[in-house]
Length: 182
Image 1: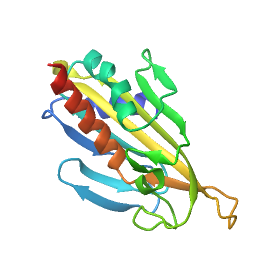
Image 2 (image 1 turned 135 degrees about the vertical axis):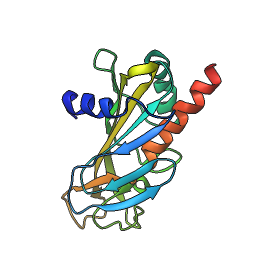
Image 3 (image 1 turned 45 degrees about the vertical axis):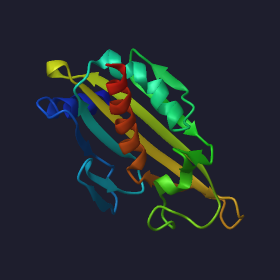
């Protein structure tokens, strides 16, 4: 995600309620899933970016990100405070957020997000934070991934998009941990 895009997105979030979520996937034959808490998340075979404004200082949000990722079973490899990016570009565990990683992705032949076949996944989950006016913090999570069949039926990786669940859980855990810290 380009810094210019993120700054433009953050500017749009300036005067919002405590939690506001939008998402902007790369367009390709998307389907739409609506969620009253998280707004509308559009799914495609590319990455999904979900953005939220939280009523909390950026330093507080940054401090809880390691605990959020730990609770979701994500081993972070990226922790760049200067760029305000935290997460991983290579989550390869079959487990994620208490379940199967493939169940949190929407791949071309997995229909509703769950797949009956055995797949090896590689998922990028990156959360970026930015200061917003009024002491709020913009939280943007970008999720993309691939799935490769382990059954030998295909050697090519399928591009997958998030179902939106990882992004919702990240925001929910940040919110919960910020409340505990008060």
